[in-house]
Every structure is written in C-alpha cells, then in structure tokens.
Length: 462
Ligand code: PMP
Image 1 (cartoon, rainbow, N blue to C red):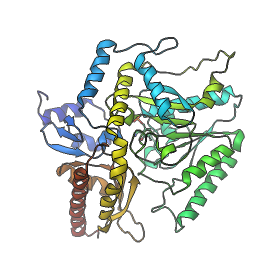
Image 2: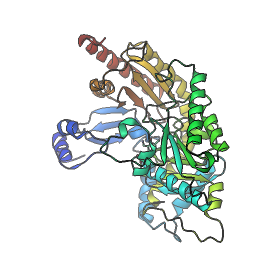
Image 3: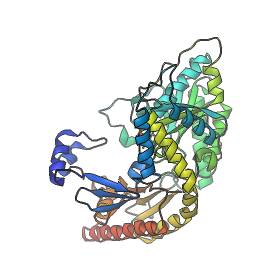
C-alpha cells in the first residue's frame, strides 16, 4: 500500500496537505486518518482496519468502490485517448454518448448537457447560463436568485453565495449578496414554531412569494435554486406539496427552477432524478455530479431545457457562450460515467434502494426510543439522525459538545463511518447495500449513542 507507516503519513499530510473544510487548529493536533484502499461499501485505513462507509465517500459512491469493469473502462479510454479538447469544433466519443444518455434519462425537455468538473462547477455553470439566457432574451434586469437557508450548492464563489448554510458563511470570506437571497429552509422538525405541517407549508410558500414580489417579481427574479432534499444542511425533507407549490410559483413569475441534484440523482432516492420522479416537478435545469461517476472520476453536468437552448442558440445572432473548462467533457470521466450508468441499469441499483428504503427507515426509526434521538429523516438511501438535549422543547446540545462527532468517533472505533454535521449523523451509503449492512449500521449507531448517553449522564447533562 505504502512504504510509510500510518504515523509517518499523518505527519507528511499535516505538513503539506491543506484539506477542504478543515478547522486548522484542530487538524494541527489530530491530523487525518489515511485511508489506503476500498472495496464495495468498505474502506480500509493504512493499518488495514475495516470500516463500512455509510457515507459513500461524500454521498458519491453509488455503485461501490473497486469494480474491475470500471477500472477496465477507465484504462481502456486512457489507452485510446486520455484527453482531447472539447472546445468549439472538436468533441470526443464518450462525451457525445454520455450527453445523449443523460438527455434520455433526464425528465421532459432537458435535452442539453454542459459538462464541468464536479457539483460546484455544475452550479456555477447553471448560474452563468441563467444570466446568459436572461440577457439573450433582453431581460437585463432579471438577475435575482432565490435559494434557501441551510442549502448547500458548492464551494466556488457563486455556488457558495447561493448556498445558505449559516455555518458556511464565516465573516472571513466574502459573498455575492446583492443578487442572491435566501428564504427559510423547509425544515419542519424543530423549526415549525408550533404550526401544523400544512400551516408551516403555507407560511413557506407565502414567504417565497413575498420575496419574489419584494425583489420586483417577474421582471427581476431569474431563478430559484433548490436541492430536492437539502443534503449537507441536514437531510431536510420538505413537507408534502412543497416542491409542487414552489415550482408553481416559479411558473407564475417566469422564474427558472434549478434542481440541484448533485446528491439526489443516480439512484440515491430510487430514481435517476428525484425532482421529477420522486417529487413530480419539471425543472428547467438539473445540476448533477457525484453519483454520475460514483466518484471513480471527477465530473459534473448541468442538464438544461430545450426552451433555454433555443434562446441561447437562436439563428443569426452569432453569440458565443463564453464559458467552459479544459476538462469539460473529459473523455476518461465520461467513459467512467457511461460504465457507471450501465452498471446501475444492469444491477437495478435504484430498484434495490426502493426495495430496502422502508427497511432502512424502520430500523433507523427504532433509534427514536433513545433519549437523545430527536428525529430520524430521509428518503431512499439518504438519511440522518438528529440529536437533541431535550425532545420536548427541541433544546440542542451546546455546540462545543460536538455531539455528532462524539457519536461518530465512537462508531468509527466500531468499524462504521457516518458523517457528523454538528448535532447530526448523516448517511448516504452505496446503493448495493444489503439488509445485513443496514442492521450493522443501525446496531452500531445504537451502541455508540448509548455509550455517549452514559457519558453524558456521568457528566451531568441528562
Ligand atoms: N450541490 C450539492 C447539493 C452538494 O451536496 C454538493 C457537494 N456536497 C455540491 C453541489 C458541490 O459539489 P462538489 O463538491 O462536487 O463541487
């Protein structure tokens, strides 16, 4: 695996690798665990300890790691042609065939694909495409974007500004705030202020319409960005009817609906695309990445409607869509995506999700009898457990207690990786998970939570 010991690797890493999303003060002392290899749902550290990776990497390992046919497809494409330019008048075979495939899988008239390097650049592409489209239509003042608090759309300047997670907007960074606006997250549990779910939904829809009107309505608002289920913001499943009603408002005010499906597409909720297949809406743009290649290669795609394409490609204007990356439509990444989709189809992985999701839900909900488990929510193979200090009044643990991390650290020690996000543990495992894997996840979570409850009792918290 490596000529170096785990300790040596950790020291080298600390000295030179600036990790994403890292609190340097903590990292300086604790470092990061080197992972040496992976197989299916499992990852192994460099001391060969095995962990079931219930996060699927970072919500991306949909088909499981280490597949020979993926390695072959990638190697074959590298041998044939590792790179060629995608600009203007050159193309490559995997990029062409993948675009055709995505157009066939995407809902309605979403027939056009722009490639990027991941989710953030797919969102950035959507953002620039929206401006371009509105300018081409002569709607130069129609530039405001609305998204939601607690949303995550990526880490480029535009994508991060569209995102609405308070913790992701520390004052040391700057954001684009003149034209990007956030309305409330559709989080019922803990945030409903005593309303019924129907009242809560009405209030959310009213807030969105008020915001649209405040910004100048149809003449000013260009697009609404929404993850079908808010992922990094805490697996927030909106109330029944929310997608439909927000989409209807977008129709009413000529606002483009962008469904950010970087996490939810490619089987995660049991469908190719959740916006249409799970929530019954027809977005104008879908952004995707992650499960598109299951993490075997970096790739993002912005799939957009024929309606938009007709405007930006109108005959006689000679307009140039001055946007794109060296690696837009990278042939090796596109070859990996094609093989990944072929495997998903052949093994009916989305079908496995639909079949096992009720069992996953039922087993996770059994954790609700524990005194600090306040909520269990999700769909398909996308779940979270929310920890609270007091179930009756939704009192949260103090942040410095780092409750999610405290529990996930214990789970690590028992061979299970879940993702701690403040007071949550989040899961998005590979789609070929079995019942036994689900049992292992839930049993390990239960024993980890029980241990933490006992510790908290002895520390006087409970
Ligand atoms: N959108 C959503 C909904 C995401 O969850 C993420 C990543 N977690 C992104 C965009 C950004 O993707 P990437 O990290 O590949 O740039």
